[in-house]
Length: 149
Image (cartoon, rainbow, N blue to C red; front, top):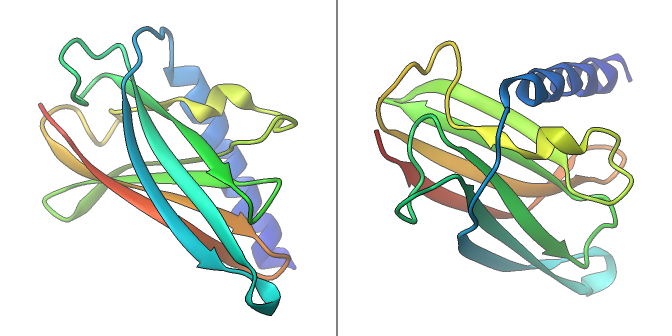
């Protein structure tokens, strides 16, 4: 139980940090990913994870811009998205947020493509759509995308 609390608390603090970094939003572009996931009792759920480029001028993600996601899933009423970005195999940015109506920090659904350890340059990012089943996170689908300098 302590591990779960610590993990959620850490993610909450990271989400709050993300909210403080984001100052402006404009523009919309979508890049989709979808999957089917076998749920309990053999029931199949359908999930999609779409990248939304905010303030992009050329339809690509670039360092210093921001992204968010549109999600859809029949697996859970409380889906989450985590985002990890790497430069040369080193984690330079990470964040997570709930993507459901009652999520208390909707501003954390906007992910800046920069951080104190990512001060410029290209990176490779992976977004993961998942939910918590009471014991562990269940991955529904992932989406990889490049971030250009």
